Image 1 (cartoon, rainbow, N blue to C red):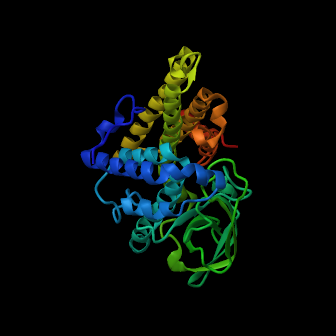
Image 2: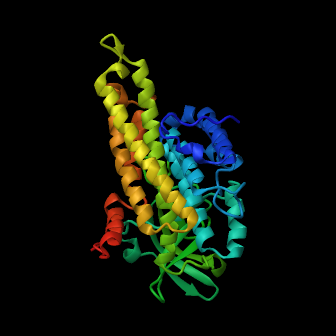
Image 3: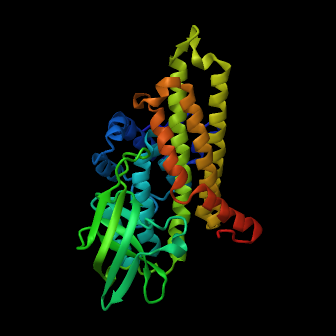
Length: 392
């Protein structure tokens, strides 16, 4: 299938990908434009998740791209970042679904699971037969998850008993398994567990009235004496350092998603600027509109350059927490500016969903906050700069 680089990729970063990677992106883009883009506004308005998305993503091979057990071909971290861009430029919620299922849930099993756990769960999740969620954030613990986790796990012979609550857990209203992070009462260390959502004592309730990422089905989770076999404890998840290994990669993924969200708003604004006529000519002919578009493209381009470099570092093994933290903080901050400038171009029309841009504008707020707030990520970078932690 013929691949055409995005016009918003002003410096042609996509052209550095392999032919096989570009062919995959072309197939993904066609599916998104024909099957997903026409329905997202309706689903966003109704705060409903398009279940056909699960099969579509599985059929096209977009889940499991990073893992040896499931990837359809050898590929780069930059390519996987561009997959996030293609998803988010159509809808940030679509990108978030895959980020949770693939990056966080499958990523936790890939990074912290045993060989047997990887072999058992990753193929089923890549095929869309098992949907994953990731339970770290709690009602009283967000930025301080490393120290403030209140969910507990107690070893009882060949089983573990888990008690606690989780909040803001994406995919959790329909997930088949949720990766639950809990403190072991014996050693006070954070450990990870693959928890089937059908387990007695596990319940998930949809969080209503969200005005950002409305398509994403976030839930409050309650765990009351949830008992699972020891075989479902992630073998190599034995402290928060192991949790952080998962988050290091997914923070970079969120940076890519932020670029895609910016591009979605930018593309809508460019199209509108070429169609909307005021004072006898298209508004794209006016200097102030061109200024907003140029500033938006500058933000997109700078963020893409940063994301490309972080992905290269991920591939060569030099990426550290502070690198993904800076990418996430920078790209989401620039996204917030960009979607506001693009919405401004629409004037009053920009606040109704039929023009697309308000969806990107609203969804940007969630990306700005999740996977570590801007402030927390800047503190991770600040620690690397100064050698001094300033978290408390």
